[in-house]
Length: 278
Image (cartoon, rainbow, N blue to C red; front, side, top):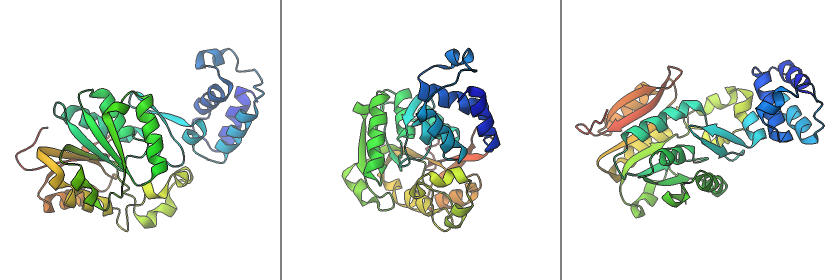
């Protein structure tokens, strides 16, 4: 298949960024870089792996899973169907964490998935250490690989636990910060998601009947594990600011919501009254 043939196939399948994705697929499966591809767009790339990848993508199987990796912040992450796909919106969570964590902070990342939030935070803050928690061993294995690949493996601990049952926290001591990009989609909305999202792990998406199950537990029960002056940074859905703020206030936290780069509400910043850092 040539570059142009792949572009046409992807476009006919309704893939918006057909040219960009064609380049990524050819580079990935034919071991060339983008600069080399510029002069070889008329070449017939005789690669069964490339052809299979194009067919998969035309069926709207996620590009990120086909490639097997994805960039997030300044790092590259291995991803599989066991991990949520890292998204640019979540980079706002990391940006705030990097700015707000105190010197030599110890933080915990709940529902870590690929580990992208904790790892990119650690990569930008070499003075910090972290614990990352996820329910599934398969997912944590990938997070561990990503930590090593991105040079922070010696500063992160990985724990397989159910975030909705926080008793395990008793053995971990206190933290300066709690980070989380938890599941926050309403259960009834899962069947209405874009086709590509349905390939991602449902457990990383389903936030319960109103999408707020994890926020009730994290905000209501994890606060006691924060050191004096500690904070929480939680990713939220675009329409959840009011609900999450109400949960925070009920638990005794002050809550501010920050928008992502697309202008949508994205990160809830929680602290005890008088501990504000922003």
